[in-house]
Length: 216
Ligand code: E4P
Image 1 (cartoon, rainbow, N blue to C red):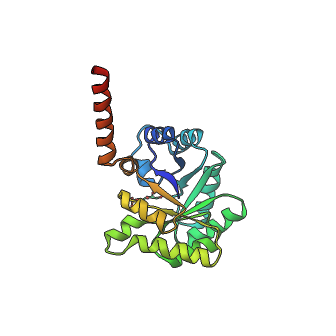
Image 2: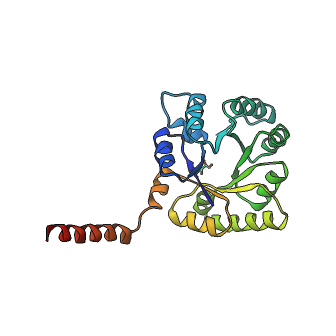
Image 3: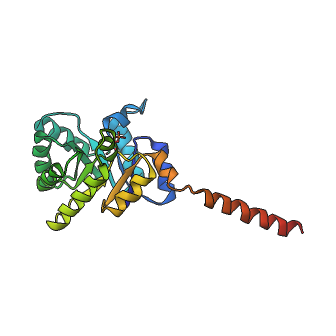
């Protein structure tokens, strides 16, 4: 499973890129709205100048015609722009057009296996099931990852599964075990993946022992 970061914040992207684990970026209108003093297009240019993997940029039109027009413009920004489209009838009409034009797509707001199958058959490059938001309403988001992974495997579907709406490190472990190709992770949760109290204690102990040796 590959790591994407779920943010439009350039400092967060730079920091995780420097660690060497970043395979892509996802943004959404809520994340972009947090970024002040920069246009969406300017921010996408900045992000794509750092990250060579997929960078998802979401359209805001609700009709296929508008989504197609927006997506074609966004796709001109850089070759690694992926057009993020909501899981609706109009969204999938747009996905089928983008697919024929060779423009990559990420179908977002997936909450059922049937939605994922429809998106894949329309030609989506990626589907994004939202784990945390399903958990929030008392359903099991991780079971959805297992169902989609099994369905895509049985039918030999090449669409990649992005585990989205990740809230904690256990979501990441389980998404990987259940067959997600990618997890798109908020910066805060990505940093939590590094932490283990025994690692920190181990470093302290090694340093304490080393200093004893130098001073003796
Ligand atoms: C994914 O592409 C979405 O941007 C994201 O994971 C949504 O997460 P949230 O449910 O925490 O807003």
